[in-house]
Image 1 (cartoon, rainbow, N blue to C red):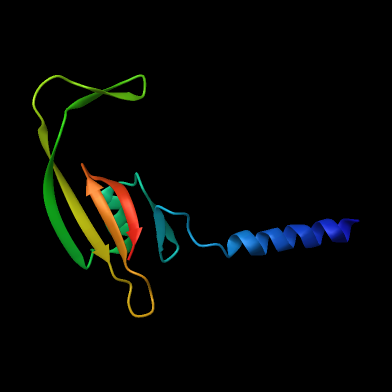
Image 2 (tube, rainbow, N blue to C red):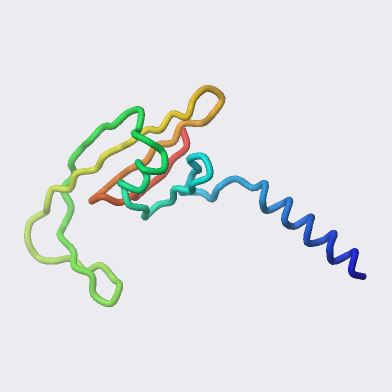
Length: 110
């Protein structure tokens, strides 16, 4: 009975340990980068991106009430969005990271 449990635990560990990072995340060496991370932390973990582009979008202003965003009357505000591309070399997929207000908002594998 004990050997069955041990084999099951080893098999589960091997299976889940071999899975890639979840969607909306990627690895820089042993460090995991996820949506919501601070932009400075990403650079500290991965180094500078190979490419950076920036654009501005207009968004309605919001306030957060009880954890929910609520629109505020008034004109739109300009928000800067940076797109970073990390190239980890031949044979590895590039990662595209969108940064808004100093936070990672989206991660895509290219």
